[in-house]
Image (cartoon, rainbow, N blue to C red; front, side):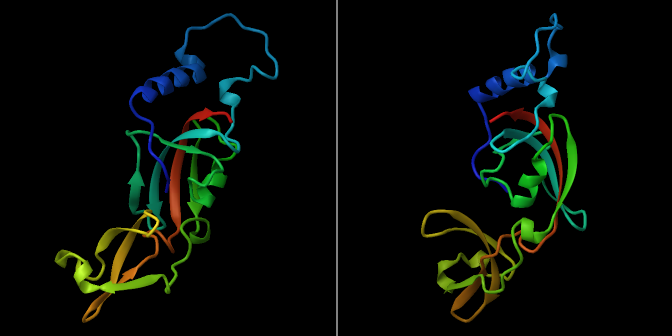
Length: 186
């Protein structure tokens, strides 16, 4: 769903400070200051192209089976519009505000794409560990460029194994329950 790493360590303290700055209820009341275009209320900040968005999410398939969640864990941190999220979810974040929750249904065409029956490769059987020689087994592999990919054993032949190269969520309608925790404007 995402490329990159979550923020951890020293950066977490910076996020806490930033969260306190963006949540006026967490700070003592100060006398009102002059307002103008540069002093927008934090809750008025909306996700826009280039915003760094901190999310909490739960992902289910169309049948309601829970596939992934980060609730109670480190937020997912993405920059809106830079390709870190599947297109359907990325667009759905536009205009959301801190604290806002949304249910987003993403069809395969806006997620990981439809299943491509030609997305396969055949490898010699001896290149796989013996315990992986079962149809349906999920394996991690690397492309020639070093990118990590997930593959599934589709078929076992006498001398070779056919691997399915489709993303594990290809062809599925995905349902995200998302909540915006923090927005860093672009």
